[in-house]
Image 1 (cartoon, one colour):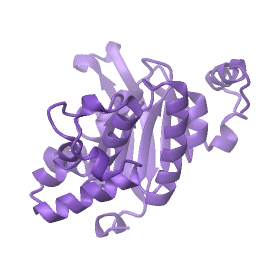
Image 2 (cartoon, rainbow, N blue to C red; image 1 turned 60 degrees about the vertical axis):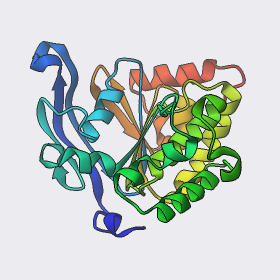
Image 3 (cartoon, rainbow, N blue to C red; image 1 turned 180 degrees about the vertical axis):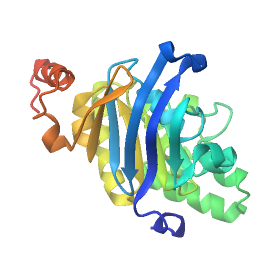
Length: 260
């Protein structure tokens, strides 16, 4: 654990009665009355259907959006009070298809934030090699490749490495494995689950896949129409009687050969 994180062994992220309306019009509400705390070291999975508000909630955490009402705190400071560059560089962000710069090599993509932070060349190179090994990519084979020369799974590994490059205490992941084929997706889910336990980061992970949520989460938060309707550990989630929980559970049971 680094010094940055040791100060915040409680809640690294907190939502206090947060609502978000499009163009500040209450009738066009995306999120309503969200109160939520994310504690150090947990993997919180935001689960919900398309349009339920998951990605909006994620973007409120790194200052890409600001609440219409209420307050979002990161490391005990409102996102409105942060220098946005400092806030975002202290939060790793992984999206679907990785979002890599196509004209950068793998090494240059991973080194993006350390370079912006003016790390010296030797420290940056060592960190790039360390992280490529961590995500299962041999540096001598992959460091000089361009994203177009990688498979989808390899690009996602690079995306995770880039998000971790400056050792941020918080990692946000927006359906990072959603565009992958089922076999690659399952492999990366297992690898990421082991990696999350090893690193001890605070992770907020967006998905609409209940199976993924049950595998990765230490706690699942279910959103419906911009509101939190259920919150539980994976062990308890399937026992909840809320209709939206039952709808997700039914979809799990309907999958061929699926078992909770």
